[in-house]
Length: 100
Image (cartoon, rainbow, N blue to C red; front, side, top):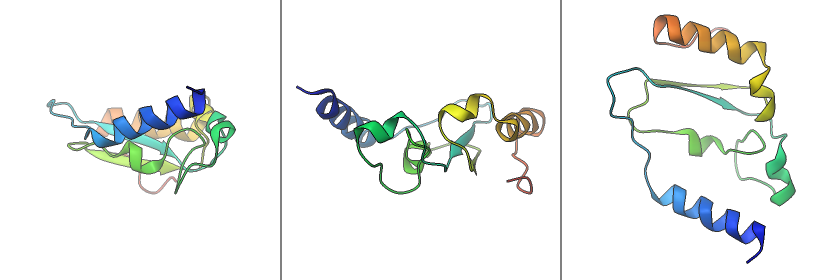
């Protein structure tokens, strides 16, 4: 089985299983919308994505909030915008809707 086939099958299995957050702590999701990343090596991802993860894959039942920022998957690690949003969420339990 090729790596591409393995990734496609793994993704299909993950999408069939709904993600749920049942803890009492707030869950904030940061998603990217700049499609630059290793995922492009395996073909084009559908819809809005960060080059590795599709926006639809970031939806988790029970999440408090999700923010979508114009960054690629790997760039999230060094993005000042991402860091600022995470800091706001950790302080307030909500993202800053005015800063993206």
